[in-house]
Length: 151
Image 1: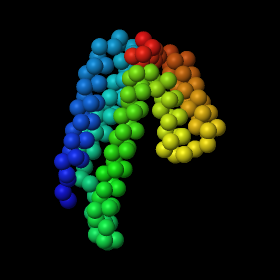
Image 2: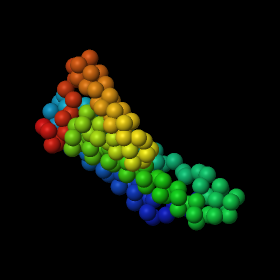
Image 3: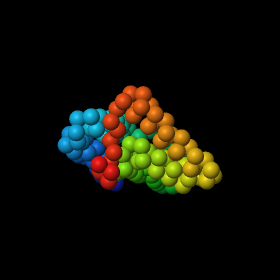
């Protein structure tokens, strides 16, 4: 299976992005660097696995239906959209902190990706943000990363 240049550019870009933000997180105070490091390490591991794992099934299925270019194009588009959602989440957490970034990301994801009703798209992120606050800040007494905009 051939990998085109655009696939590799995206994969390497995300490896470099997570590695850079992981390195930047060491400039945060010790207690606030835990959450960004967890996000960076998970993202870096995911990006490295994406570089290593071969892409299976796209061309095999495309040959069966006879639309190799269409199916291969959809695979790249779907992969690119998934990485964009991940980048949006990471960016919102870095800018707005874990609670606000997660709430805003979940709202966008539910409303514009899953096409949920407004009531669900507004209530679920608020409940999730409350749970994150109660679990980490109150129960575990962790100082949550407040984001670059709020620190």
